[in-house]
Length: 118
Image (cartoon, rainbow, N blue to C red; front, side):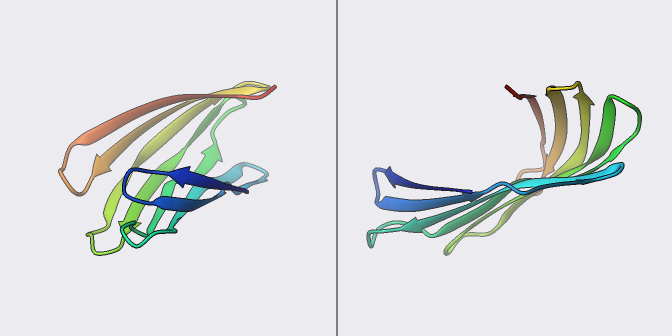
């Protein structure tokens, strides 16, 4: 969990980040939850889950599952994305590939990430 302050062009914000991760046997669930609370009148309250991802271990190094994201802001239509996720995992690092179908413009978003541990 982290708490931060941001000075954006339209307002100052209090930002709260929660990053839960649960692993039990061959099943893993992780996510990044972001909440932005405006400290000024012109800001917009926002909540994002980017991504929430349940995964199943397929082999010693390969995990497969789904990724889901949602962006919610006051007075705006929620934006959702969902699709498959693959992870190649080593002892300290993971290479993650997500293919997300965006419900708001019907294109596919490809995201690649390297998650490294020290």
